[in-house]
Length: 211
Image (cartoon, rainbow, N blue to C red; front, side, top):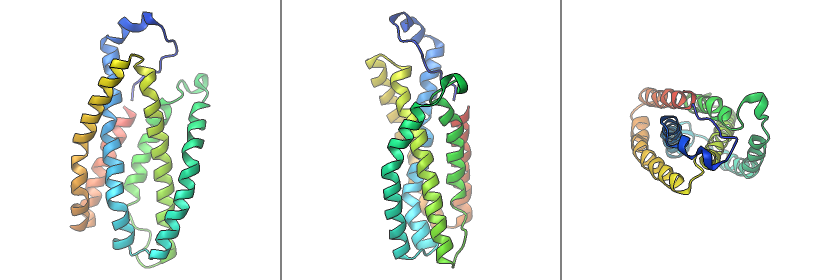
C-alpha cells in the first residue's frame, strides 16, 4: 500500500493535497476497506459454527477459550497501540505503513490457514487450534486496523477531506460486505468450496495490503 506519512504539517502543503498524488493516497487508503470488511466479516459469521458445530469442540472448552481470549483482548489493544507509536521511523521509513504492508498479508494468510482442521476427534488439539488461530487472528486484526485508523488524520489534515474519505470508505466497506452473506451457506455446502472462497478473499486482501 503506497501511502506516504507526512512529517510536516503546514498550510503550504494544501496545493499538493489536490494533486494526482494526493488523490492516489486517498484511494489507497479507502480501498483497504475491502479486506477490512471481508476478513473480519467472514470470520465473525463462521468461526463459532466452524469450531463448535463442524469440528465439534466441547462447549466447556469453547467457553474457556472465549474467556482466555477476552482477557487477552483487554490487554492487546493498548499494548499494540504503544508498540506501533514507538516504531523507529528512521530505521523502518514509516511508523505505520510497515504494519499494513507486511502485517496485512500475514493476517490474510492466518485467515485462510485457520480453516484447515488440526483434528476432528481430539478435543485438546481442536481447542489448541481454536485458541491459537483466535489469538493470531485478533492480534493481527488489531495491529492492521489500529494503524489504518491512525493514518486518516495524518494523510488528510482538512476536516472536510476526512469526512469525505470516511463517507467513501463506508460505501466501499458496505459493498465489500456483500460476499460475507454467502460465507456460511458456502461452508455448509462443503469445505472444499469454502476453502476456495476464503483463498480468493485471502489473496485479494494480501494484494491490496501489499501493493
